Length: 152
Image (tube, rainbow, N blue to C red; front, side, top):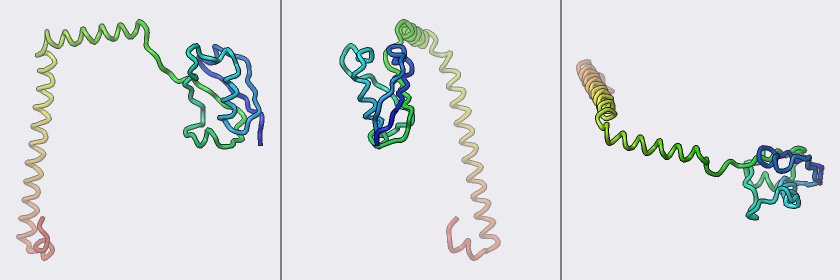
């Protein structure tokens, strides 16, 4: 059962080919195969464009017959950041250099946080041990039969 499907391109693909694409197909994969016949959508390296199709999250959905009339195709994001990538590298190098020049500035803060966390956990452990001992003593003093059978 073939039905007319409208392929709607988004992003970079829409910039390459902005005309409406209507094909007769029964599956989304069949409709997508028709894009290979549009010269503007052929990548220079011959590899297919990495795309995401709205509503398709598995290979089964791609090859199953569908009554979906509109197919939204989005290019996958990939590639480098250009000059922004160079800026991030320089910022990283600067931060690493500062960590060698000022090791105690960041280390002092981390040490304070670690000591506070350590003492908070130590106090929590002491309180739990105290409460456990109190419950055990209370149970033995009142001589509850269920306390004697199982060890608390």
